[in-house]
Length: 354
Image 1 (cartoon, rainbow, N blue to C red):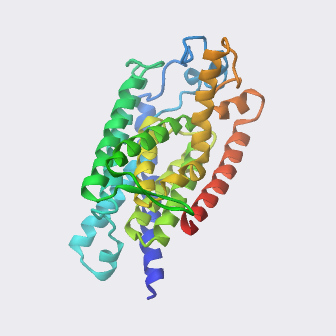
Image 2 (cartoon, helix red, strand yellow):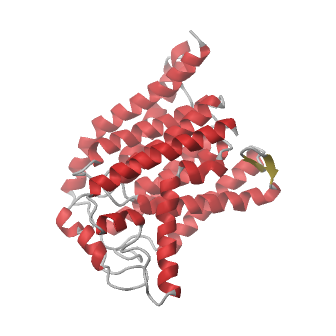
Image 3 (spheres, helix red, strand yellow):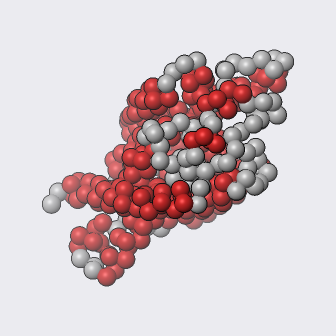
């Protein structure tokens, strides 16, 4: 069989397996999430600057919705089970097919898998605190400072791994060439991971974050595939499979929300994948909706601070602004999906030809 076809099978088959596992496992997960009422018990009452969140309360009345959090378990759970099953089968039945399907490797997939699981477990702890109404953040959960600190620690570990273990100390500037950073690569890695973490605010409307993240990881799967990083391409495709399984149940009306255990793992893992593919500088294009959502929050806070409380948007992040001016949530979601697919495609092309 043609090597390209074999590589495509290696990428697509595990993705399909992850999707199937997610679809089959979700009814079991949702049974327990509803049984134990794993939703936020009260709506957010205050904004980040301590003022009443009147518009946000109208858009997100969690008390009435009674929609569970922790849907992100479907994503990372599907990824972990798929990788584990293929790894075990490759050792129990070391045939040519099973050996080819295995994609767990030190250089390409160890770090993104570790990041996904570690960050997702931190997000799970945050979700549990939110559900129980505990924690130091608005509405419950881990204080923002602690979450930022954990993300920076993961970024420090990841940056050190790239620098010390993989020998990476430079980045690629499209259409220009390589830029050597030396030891500064580590703090740069941390900054990128923190920036993507801030993009997690995009998780706020049924189906929105799932569709956007599926487009982003599909683009990086394509980049890795054409770079002949087949193991990494397979990993990204498995993540997409898990996201699509989650999205199957998250489209309106959602059976559950992705919440921190999903979005925290995905955004931090995305940083690792971007560096592994040397396509980190096209992140603002491929992940454009994440940066737009994060940027709108920053603009809103700066405007209120330096313009005597005046706001640029009715409510931030920007997707809620569109809801506030009358767009139905499904229209916001679908238009952001379209935007995400287009920018992800453009970014992938730039990464491949640049």
